[in-house]
Image 1 (tube, rainbow, N blue to C red):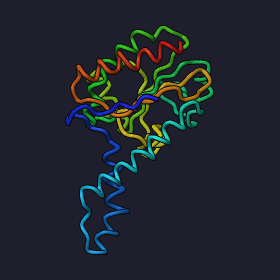
Image 2 (image 1 turned 90 degrees about the vertical axis):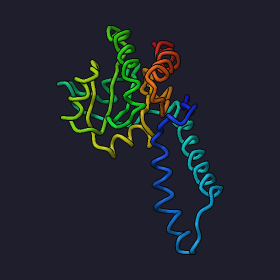
Image 3 (image 1 turned 30 degrees about the vertical axis):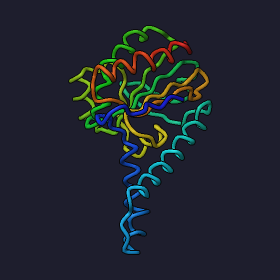
Length: 205
């Protein structure tokens, strides 16, 4: 498994949101009830514990079957059974996620390189509405299939990680590679995708 580690303050990883939510709903009320204010050390400890638990779950997911799904998009049905036998690249994004947008050029490049390969499938998931998804596809533009699903389902399929999320499934439908988070700089984001994610796809084809 490969998880992108932030290199500077421009990195935006949505796991921060989940950590903040965890802190707000489960930790702060307890501290406030005791008239205490969490220290920086306590907050860091909570974040580290959350991160370690998430990383452990992600590592345990490698080699296991990808969660079941079935959706219709672009007039076609996409589900686990129909995609077996193919190497599947799955991308997760939403419009307000700057690192997600920064990856688009590189993802388009990967699609163009491999779209004629019958053993390859490229799917993108977003929790944006179909109308907004269509607008984003036209703006950038995105030539591959983008499936609009609800937020809860989006997090289920990206294993409750942040955005952007990129996964590669082998021909049996097992998870072989995962990366989460990214850089807001398009050049840096594209370099990472082409130099790290693309070779992982090619190795399996």
